[in-house]
Length: 108
Length: 114
Image 1 (cartoon, one colour):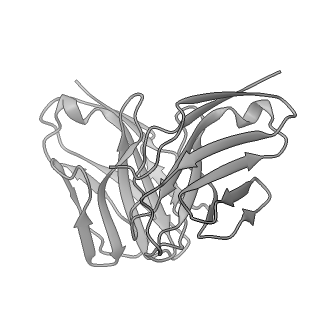
Image 2 (cartoon, rainbow over the protein chains, first blue to last red):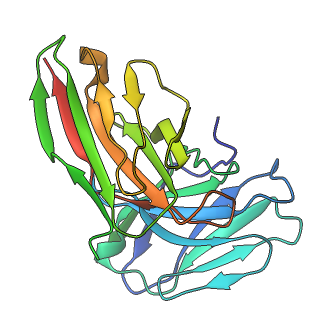
Image 3 (cartoon, one colour):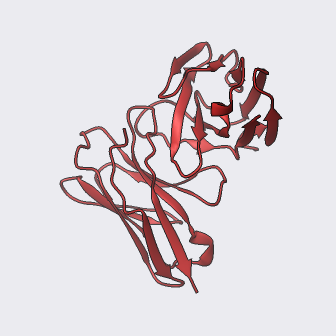
């Protein structure tokens, strides 16, 4: 079973920051938090991952709480092309266990 | 650099037929895996491989076989297709196994079993 809990859907205005929350209260010390997104029925696209420090790349930022029980993915300036299902995943050694994700709708 | 390539993109089979879904990567990745995605659901792991000659079962392995004779290729075989295997199949790879290795996905094979 997935080790994460996400809201089923969220809306965001174009140009605004999208903040997607994720709870992972049973995460263990070696497990990383990964974020992927899936646009329509395309293959999942890797966004970012982290262990305990905040991470930033060209796509997004990942904020992990100090106790590591939750995290937030931040898309700083959402565009219509960011409309997708976003999956927060705690990686089980070498397996990705997907939940049902958050459907993010970016509106004009 | 093509990344992860899956063929075919679409396939329709009759119940009882067999077929092989192809997956190839050109990134010299040791780890490869197969997932299926049913409508409205997240991906579920079918089989995975941590290197040539090594395979293991995932969450939903029944009805599927895999082999890994080369680093580049990881085919998925359906020996006797059933309507319950109608799904979208995704292949993924990462440089090695482990927690700190992101997996990269192909574009999928859309399979319908009649």
